[in-house]
Length: 240
Image 1: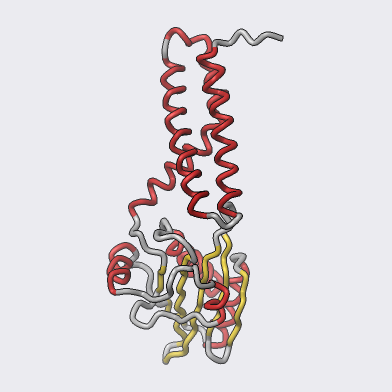
Image 2: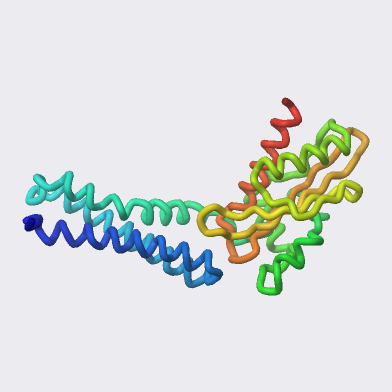
């Protein structure tokens, strides 16, 4: 069966599917461990998908192609994921280029078991003064959580919350008050490390959380979001 659709409509559709395939390949490249090359391919696929969407959107508005508008828009659909992901990443550029976030910046919870799991190629675990200043400016809401619950109750609740969030708990130390866990991202399979510290005080207990990306200069706000999710889940459980 001959396709009488104009090449000006067919080829952008083919390119949209090609870019969708490149996007999928970029994810596989990142998951294989070549995250820098994979992210470059990912960004390129997203950028070209966005350009293609704009082209096809303008094309659908030209009177000459008015009768093919629905056909053009259908063929543009494979370019939507790449363009959408790129726009989401661009919005996250407003956050500082840091990857180590803690609710306690003066005495951040320390990792122990996870140090060996991270390996030599991972980001360092030292918080510089510059990073601290950037976090204070960007995430002033991230602070130590005061709970009226006892130390033991808060520790157990913190452990349950971490597991409920889908984190892989790799260290439990109720005597020292530490919990270490790994959170693996769904798409790119990035592994980010979390340490939770529970301490007792006169009014109950104090809970601190630190989340650090293993690779990359900027976490695009992911670690702050992870800490907020934990704190919100912990508070909801404590009030329940």
